[in-house]
Image (cartoon, rainbow, N blue to C red; front, side, top):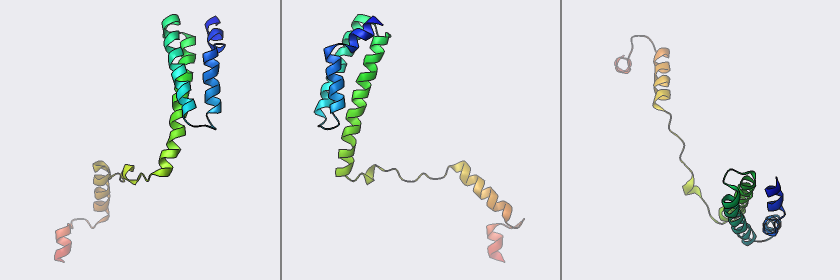
Length: 122
């Protein structure tokens, strides 16, 4: 627990957190600064406390949070400026199993003993 208290009271940690909270009003530069700080804190913590320590987990969380917020901040800007119709996937075709089931269901509703060619002959 001492290491967690040490990392949360670290000036770099506090600076990165303040960059993220003030990042909502400014550009992505504040998020990028927070990402760099959390990346260096994470590397340092992994070297001193180990990859699986609680302190490293806190740094992983804050680093991931900064990355996520930076991506979310950028995404609306990109989608507002461009039309991404080409990125949309076409509607899925029915699976062959579903198509066979429908054709079997259709065959059950037809008159017994009549095929398509027999119906045309009548």
